[in-house]
Image (tube, rainbow, N blue to C red; front, side):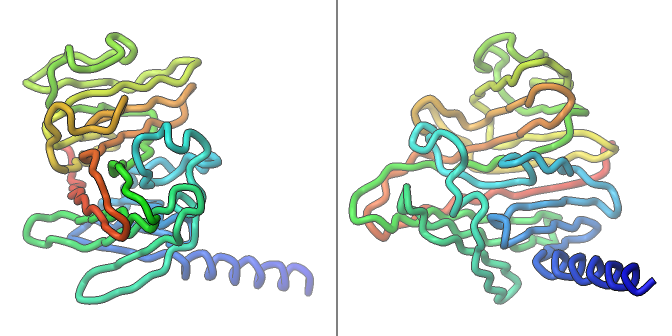
Length: 266
């Protein structure tokens, strides 16, 4: 009996510790949960009690994260200080700001500034990449959000701009391109030239992200404004967006803002 009580107490303490690590940002009926001790990843995004982000905990591949682009500079796995490091947290004037350690490999520091726009119903995330090296660097911002392998992904782009052609079954419909989630035994990824927004519809909800629309030549080499990655099997999908490839002098930073909207589907 004593052992059972002790184990129960320990479990409660561990649960409380995990909850204490998480921070929340709320606007209206939408709640975003971020863990600064896990790379400042977004672990949950709910409208009331409905979740839109994948709750699988695949190693290296869960929640919504942020990387630097192009990927060829670090390949895989993700840079630890950026993707899973312990971020410092400051709350001030309605902003929740989380800052990473400096990456030993890339010499970048990442800052994530979470705030809300109640009038617009948006959660606003401004990502900053700070060049902590002693040389000029060129880099682009990159947001990656894992969602369940269900529902529909859609955005504004010419069907012919999606490459490789035919890898994912996109269709032109109602002025946008749409992909109905499907399952395959291999990993698949496409690039597209969008118009500054990307949406995902599932579980009675629509998640829309808005960001700067890139012009031809602005993405990092072999990258794109919009990317969709479908993991093998019935697991998860990544909806991804990137900002402009930017030259940073030593000590200089770039800021890139993504506005998140989560609403009931009509």
